Length: 568
Image (cartoon, rainbow, N blue to C red; front, side):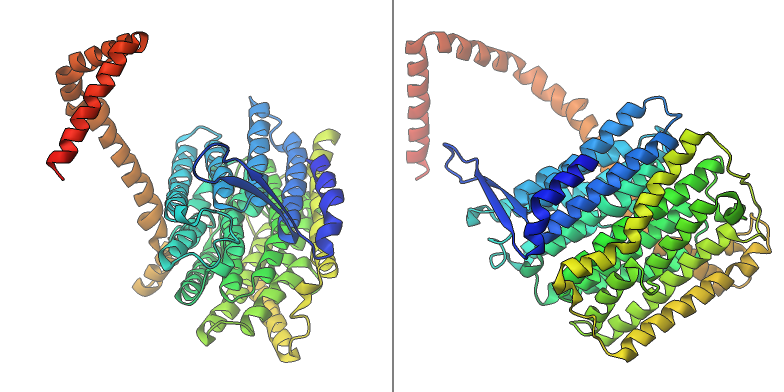
């Protein structure tokens, strides 16, 4: 993977930094009547996205030497991750609909195998929800290919001014299923049943960002009501995930809902005509979110698989390096000054405020920024303060295991600290909103620091009670109902995830019983078996006797002509 990083960097980085792009078009039509070609498109977005995927995947491979050391078949896991990275790069560099379909299907199949890696009931259920939700997006892409076949081209720049409103709707539905936007948000928290290295790769920089990348490429196709719909979906996703994360106590689910919140911010930037700022935030977010997953995974590993944040305490003295990088990721996530998240998030927020966004959307954006700071520093306080129920012992293991865990954290940590500043220096068009009014910048910083203060103090009353405390036991019907609504993700798992899995699987069982084991097979096979077998024997004999074959086709042609004359 690291060799791939060097290859892509030295081959294309100078070109894209100078503002250039390359298009390779390979003709595959041959003797077919329909023209078909595969396009490879190289620009700043594809090159930087591929570099981030390759660098993160190489760090995760290194981390797997520590985390997956006790697995029975680590080679199978590594090959699945390699296949996932290959399909992701195909998806990045081939933005035509046919090319995206190849990478899209590969991502869906391999992600199912990775999410269901542990082969228990929970993992299998999460894998089913993930793959069935992805099938909705796959079906939309197949319908889009059929609807645009008359254009004689499936390249994204040829389709900019040829898509109707229904075709644009297909692109949007396909994108929001992959990026887990409302109402298809149930699969991302469920997919946390996968191993933590899978979550660090699949759910930070690859699978969930594929939908945002599609929206980035096909942004010129959207206009009018489609952009309004996208902004509404993104705002609902940000608010839902931010509210749930402030009450969640599962470590991996807090990180999952924070990913949902940031994906909503990227989609909101694209809907506000700030697609470059959204792509900038996608790149920086991939690094610090994968680092956050690795830090959380190290804590879960040393805590014997426990994921309740209230059961950890004193992490500063037991795992100081992991704690330090966890604080760095929370600083980036909340957008504190001079971190990578500060540059990218402020570009998105200031671009949205001065772009095509309503006043209500601006208030929701400010609320989402506040909630991001609250749940980030709440997580830090839960894991580092001393008034919790600690289960971690002081970190003491072999030297090989120690460095297999720490070196990937240091590599990703150094990159996530400086990648925002480096990208701003390399690509000047990302500096479009660096000179916004001072009142806007001060208001954003003030909201961030208030959120940090609230997040650090929110856990005082949570830590004073037993770990069996549940928000549903609160006094008052209204408070109990609101907590149930928020912690239940607005009942989206019941409305989308469970329905998608149960309806899809029940329909599959019914079709199996009806066609494979039901009356249709018996009726067809019993009644028409002899006729089918006789027809097969006749065709086989006719293929060896040209005269018999010519007589057969002549009689068939006469029957067709007679039918055409009768019904003319």
